[in-house]
Length: 145
Image 1 (tube, rainbow, N blue to C red):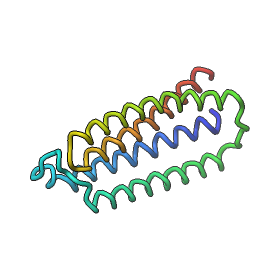
Image 2 (image 1 turned 90 degrees about the vertical axis):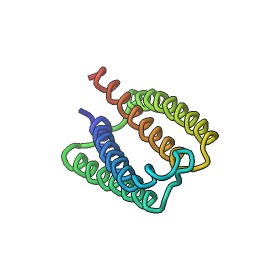
Image 3 (image 1 turned 180 degrees about the vertical axis):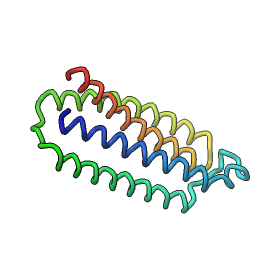
Image 4 (image 1 turned 180 degrees about the horizontal axis):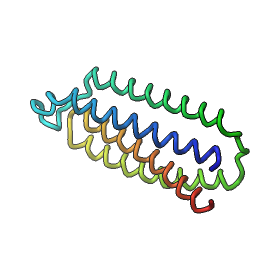
């Protein structure tokens, strides 16, 4: 398994961990708003912004530690043309997922006066697009192996 492939696995794990933490934390913190405010008027509250910062910190910390471990245990191999082509294909599919999410979030913004769901849909599709990008790259790496 190449350094790039191991890096993709680390990023999939880090992004999944951070998204899982953020999703559960937001559901817990926003439960009162879910019960009292109509869905169209929900707003992103300061505790949710704080949770986002923590999720980003978890993501970055996990990614840094994971890449340090990979670098210590494995000699880096130079990136070749195949790796660049695989990265482009993954980015292409991830970009399509992100475009669908942006369209959906903009459509939702027209229907609601609050910013909570718009923000969560955008963030969710951003994470989904990255995970799709990484998954496509891993699949293409495995096909060549």
